[in-house]
Image (cartoon, rainbow, N blue to C red; front, side, top):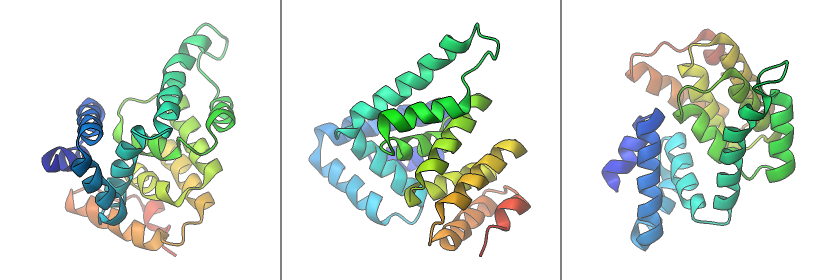
Length: 199
């Protein structure tokens, strides 16, 4: 499990989803693996890794039902709007539905998927950042920071930064410093808008 967790932390797209599924299966059948995840969720230096560990644990809790329902909804809703004049789901409407149905219970899952899953349409990124902005969980800040650094789309970065501003995370400077250092180790340029978040 150690290797799968480390690989999940560093991967994205379909490889990430495969690692996440393996971790979920391991945690459900082996109490020692679940305990290890609890320790990682509490103390890993990388806050996105903490988020990953917590989400994997939450899949086996009552939240798992909400997780599946939210993901099913996000997969289904584009088909409903395909033949309409707009052609895609309105992000504000998607955010409102997620909030009405789930409150903030799927925020950590969707923050993690925002930074880990590739190929999302604009409406989905806008809807999820609006949802995270509405619920202001400190646990989602690092995922939003990482997304803001890694996305090549200036508008998506702006949406993520707006959500971060609304969260008012008291540990923002510490989390930002970690994400900037991580990006530089990987040879990634940190956009000026992200660096300017430092208080």
